[in-house]
Figure 1: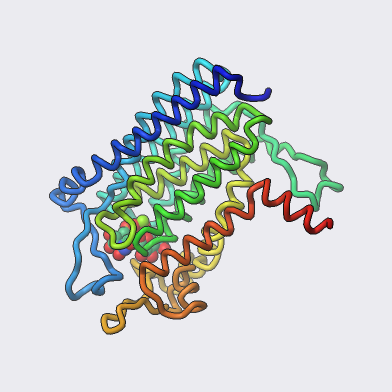
Figure 2: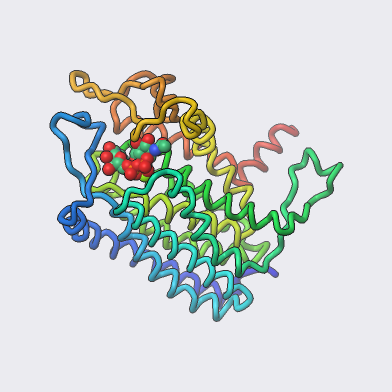
Length: 358
Ligand code: UD1
Ligand code: MG
C-alpha cells in the first residue's frame, strides 16, 4: 500500500503543526519543573566544571520527564490520525504508546531510586511487553547482500524476532545512557538519530504506510527534545536524567520496529555501537567500572583530559584529538554522530554507490 493521498497529507501537516506546540509547551514548562525537582532533592553535580569535590555546581536533574510527558499527550492525540487514515495500524500505535509510557514511568523511578545496573537492564524488556504481546506484523528480516545467494532475500525469524525486538529496545535505551556525561551529549545525539529516522521515513514514504506511521511517532519527539536541548546544552541549566535516555531509546525502537527498518536504525547508531563495544570490558567488570566514567577536568587550563582506563568514546575522542573544552568536545562528538547517521541515508548511499560504479 502506498501512503498519503491529498486529504491525508493535509491532516498530517496539521499533526506536524501540533508538534511545534509540543516544543513551545516543553520550552515553557522545563524551567518551572526544574525548580520543583531541585526542591525535591533531585539534582546532580556538574562534574566537568569544577571537579566532583571542590566548588560543586548543583543542577536540577531528570528534566527529561517534561518533554516525555508532553510527547505522550501528542502521541495520544495522534491516535485520532491513525484511526482515521491507518485503521490497520491502530493496535500497533496503542501498544507502542503503552511501551513508551511504561518506560517513562520506569525511567523516572530509576532517577529517583538510583537503581543498580543489573536492575536498569531489566527496565526496557519489561516496558517492551505491550509491543511484544500485541505485535502482529511480519517476523521476517531482510538479509545483507553478502549472504543472500545462500539464504535468500529474507529470513523468517519466528519467535526469535520477539527476542530481537526486546534486545533492540534494551540496546537503544542503554547505549544512549552510557554515552553521556558531557553537557548536551545525551539530547544532542538523540535528536540527530531522531532526525535521521524522520528523513529516512520521508524518503521512503511513497513505498509503505508504515513510514507515515513511524514519522508520526518521531516528529513530536524531535520537537519536544529540541526544547530540552536548549536548557541542557553547554553550560547545562538542567540535566536530562535516565528517564530521557530510556524514553528516547524506546521511542526509536518503536518507530523502527513498527516502521520495519530496525537494521537501518542500528546503522544510524554507529557512535553508540562503538561506545558500547569499547565499554564492554568495564560493563563486564573485567576492568573496574567507577560510578562515573568521565574525563578529567583541569582547573588550570579549563580543559578536559582523557582518562585511559575509562573506556568510553568520549575519552577515546580526547585521546585522538587531544585535550579540549567540554563545549568543543560535545561539538566534535555530535559532528561525528551527524556524519555517521547521514552516510546511512538511502539517497547518500545510492549516490556513493553510483560514484563507485562510475
Ligand atoms: C552513565 C555512565 C557514567 C556517566 C553517566 C553520566 C556508564 C556505565 N555509565 O551512568 O559513566 O558518568 O552516565 O551521565 O557508562 N553529569 C555531568 N554532566 C553532564 C551529564 C551528567 O556531570 O553533562 C553527571 C551529573 O552528576 C548527573 C549524573 O552525571 O547528575 C547523571 O548520571 P546518571 O545518568 O545517573 O548516570 P548513569 O546513567 O547511571
Ligand atoms: Mg544516565
